[in-house]
Structure formats: C-alpha cells, structure tokens
Length: 111
Length: 113
Image (cartoon, rainbow over all chains, first blue to last red; front, side):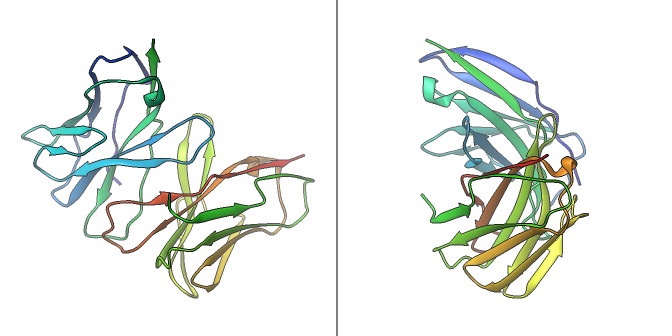
C-alpha cells in the first residue's frame, strides 16, 4: 500500500489559513487522496478527497500537485474546533474501500 | 451524523477471557469495518465485511474474529484477550466499495489487565 508522509504537528492562529502538507511520492495512477480528521475522543471524520484536480467543499480545499506526489489540505480560516489530528490517506480506487491510516498531523489552533 | 453505535463504550477485562464488541448501524450500508487505534500507529484495519456473512482480514487480524449475520450488526470477538489488545476500537461503515467516505462510530475503549 502506498504510504504518506506528514509532519507530526503544526500550529496555527485562530481565523488564519492553515496549509497541511502531505507527501506521497509512491502514489499510483488509481490512488485517490483522502483526508480525514479526528477530534479529541471521537472517531475520524471525512474531510475531502481528490484524484487529480483541486477540490473544494464546505470544510476545506485540497490542492494536488501536478505530478500528484504531494498534496495540501487548506483550511481557509482555522477555528478552535479545527484542532484535531489530520490524516492524509491514499485509497486504491481499483481495490476494496480500505483506508490505510498513517500517524497524521496534530493541528493546534491558538486563540 | 451516520447512525452508528458501538457497545460497550468502555470495558475492562482480564487476560484470557473472551470479549465481543458490537457495532450496530441504521444506515443499511453494505460495508463495515473494524479498526484499532494505538498511540504511534494511527488506525489499523482489523477485519472488514462486504455483505452478510462476507468478511475478510485486514492488516492486524491475528487474535480477532468477526461475524456478520445481519446487515446492521458487525461483531468483533477476541477469543482470549491479551494485554496487547488493549486499545480503542472503532467501527466504520460505507455504502459502496467506491464510496468516498467511511463513517466512524464513537469507539470502544478496551483494557485488558
């Protein structure tokens, strides 16, 4: 399974944009890039996903490099409720819907 | 929120005893998953199900078995619990193989003494 590399932790200030990076240099052509986040004492929740093009939804934006070897999750205005562990995951679109989680990035948001 | 419940939410048991964790969904989703979460490892897939009576192993299946006799219930059994199985267990569901989202339950904290 293709692996991802993320920083262990990041800090942000409230109401500022946050850019969470992810490297996935061994990504294959059928791998989707998914982002999930896990708030304290809760199960993970879906944030966004993409294949090749940049994606936007109500929670965040996903910017995918042209060679697809890296991606960035963008939170446009961080709030205190965005403090969580963010997981960047590659899902093989040609196989079963199994997610392989890494250790993620712990995002701290300062007021 | 997706209708997923896990029971029990907390359990303390002794080494060598059998333990069964239950995941119940009200979404009629076909796929169900069991993960465990340990410090430094993120979430790891134990077993998953792609239909009633259809299950398969994940990356850390040793010491665990599962059963799915109804669409809404997915049971995870530790036949003889060990201290290494102390963990937080999450159930997840999705409606198709290509579903963009898995919906996770609230988790069960299991301590094996």
